[in-house]
Structures are given as structure tokens and as C-alpha cells.
Length: 412
Image (cartoon, rainbow, N blue to C red):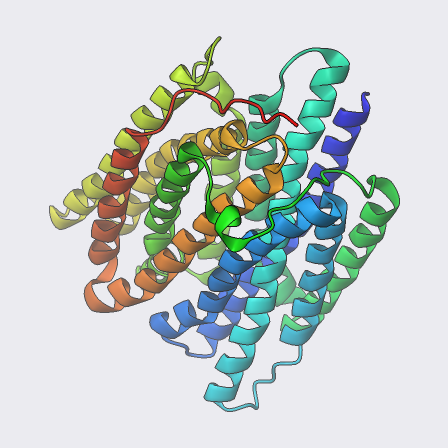
């Protein structure tokens, strides 16, 4: 195994561990506080700082990873997640609702910083490790490595959803958080002992203007990412689980379905290179694939809404079947975007470009999470689906402007 491939494997394994606990955390918080009687909008509020914190964390994390090296930022993300778990474990059912909500929002914000520091460091490491492996083995593996990393990460997140339900039922809220903090501490020690500290270090941007002045491809893809992930979370965060529960599903059924959907979505992401034709020169085929799949995806929530209004079949079955189609098209879109950002990213400051892009990703999740609670409370699942369709139409329009050429490599 080449040094580049070894580093890729180590980063992937550490991020799997992080994502497993991150998925479990979301299910722990959602089910625990819903069981305490919190409304759909209040549940959305619990996740808002988690998503908002990621916007700044990605921007700063990309700059710090360039300045101090990717492994240090990966370790910082893991340590921050442990701190968030310990902070969240202190919440008590005896507290007033206002104090409990404020405490959970704060703890979730810490975990949101951790997630995006870790994600930015890990995705940036792929660019660096693949460049090293290509130099050693003489072939490009970027699309395959990005697709496998992204797909397997989301499959792990799905397992985490299931794990969160199991831990809540067997250990309880507080003990589950302690167990996950202990497991991540072991991963942190492994990263510190295994990855080269200087990996990904380069001359960082000197000003905020330089940090935001990205290439046209990076800027457009960031805008598309806001719309894409907002369109998913506008119905997935609050709307889907609450709608299914109202249809008579148990907590275990809801958690199991979300886990299965996320695992399947991750598997499709890993297969994306086989579904999107590769270009011999530039990014012509990959950009065309992004446009095709974005257009197809925009039709799905509109079709689900139409089927629900026409009362075609049981509402929960219609939603589940629609989510299956949505998951396939969304997975290919997401994986293709994850490849394109690394293709557009500058070689010398890949971490900064990736951080900027995933700040947009966090902005999309924040927007979707907020709208999920607001729209569901105002108009139910149909309002959430309408919001999703509108965002996906914007995503499709933005992809029409994506450049079909990689940037010219920077020279000293």
C-alpha cells in the first residue's frame, strides 16, 4: 500500500467513527426530547445552532488546516465532539424547558463545530492523499475515493441513527453520551499516533477577502450546495419523522427507516462513478451528469406532493416510496458535487476551498432545518415538499452555469 493510500484509509476510518457517533447523537436528541413533549418547531430549534456553527467552523477550519496541517484539525474536531457530548450529558429532566432548550442548543452548537472541522479536514485530506498516491502509482483515483468516502460515511451515519435508538433504550441518554465520548477518545489517540502532522500544510490566505475570493467553479458549486442540502433537510429533519409518527409508526420504526434510508443513500453515493460518465479531458461529462441528476431530483418532491394531494395510496407508503427515489437521485447529485469541489479546488489551498464549500453546505442545512419546523407547523408535509421542490429548481439552474474545465494549477 502506498503512503497516500494508507493516509486515505486512516482518515476514512477515523471519520467513520466520528460519523457513527454523530448519527447516533441526532437520533438521541430527536427521540429523547420529542418523548418529553417538545413541538416540531422546538425540535428544529435544537438543531439550529448545530447547523449555524458549521458555517463558521468550515471557513475557519479550512484556513487552519492549511496553516497548521490537516491532522491537527482532524484531532481538534474529534476533541470538540467529545466536549460537546460531555456538555450535553449534563442536561437534566428537572430543569425548566427554557433552560433545557438553551443548554441543548449550546451543546449542539459545540457538536456542530466539531462536525464541520472534522469534515473539512477529512475531505481536504482526500485531495492531498490522492495527489500523493497518483504520484506514486501514476493513476487518478479522485472520483472513486471521494465517492467511496462520501457513500461509506453516510452509510455509517445511517447505522448511527439505529445505534442512537439502541443506546437510548439500553443505556439511557446520559450514559449513551459518555460511552460515545470514550470511544472517540480512543480514535483521537489513534489519529495522533498515525497521521503525519504536516499533511496538507501550505501558505494560508492573509486576508478575509482572499479567503472568500474563490474561483467561479467553487462559488457556483457552493451556491448549488446550499440549495441541494436545504432541499433535503426542509422535509427530512422534522417533517418526515413527525409525519410518519403521526401516521402510527413507532419510534423504533421511524428510527429504523431513517437508518435504512441513509445507509441505502450512502451505498448509492459509493456507486456514483458508475452512474456518471467520466471525461478524458476536463469535466464535461461530470458537469453534464450533475445537471441531469439535479433536474431529475427536482421532479421528485413535486411528484410526491401531487400523489399525496390526489390520495393515491396510504400517505406513509407514498412518502416512503418517494423518499426511495429521492434518495437515489440525491445521492448521485451529492457524490458528483463532492468530486467537483475537489476538482475545482486549488492544489495549494485545497483545505480553504473545501472549507468554503462546506460552509455553504452548512448554510443549506441551517436553512432547511429552520424551514422544516416552520413549514411543517404551517402547512404539514405538503408545505415542506413545496419548499424542497423550489430549492431543487434553483440548484438545477445554478448547475447550468458550472464551468467544464479544471482550474490551471498554481505555480510558484
